[in-house]
Length: 142
Image (cartoon, rainbow, N blue to C red; front, side, top):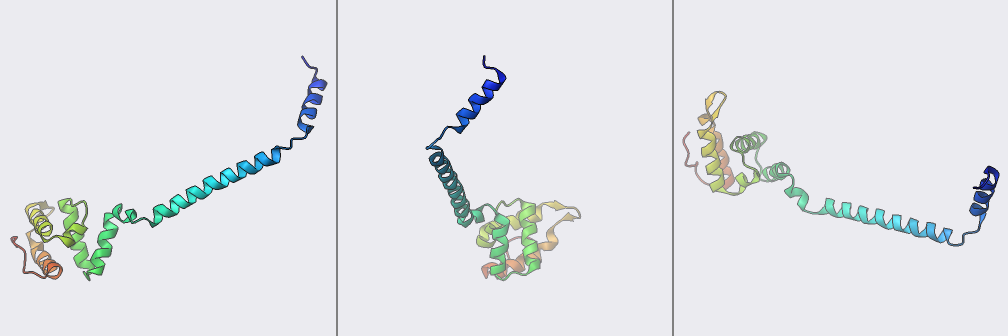
């Protein structure tokens, strides 16, 4: 066993020895960390720029498409309500497919709301349908 004073002398001698590879090791660690940070940064930029971000937010896509189609805020609200009540995962499908639109409106009319049947909204949906698909009113009651 080393005495207390000898232990400190040993440690001081050990730490004071020249290490020519220490600077090289520090440089390699810095380069490695820089590469890791650069790769993480590039991956985050790539992920932000990918079109996959649109697919992850169906309501954002719906709002953009509905605005580009020239639908008023009230029409967008009615379509959002329709998608929410019927349970459409991607509300943009209502703007694209006349079959999906008609089926969703039929389900909406068949469901019950707080104040009973929702048949009173038929004229709003018929108006929206005629503007979206340039056709006559839909084949649903109301």
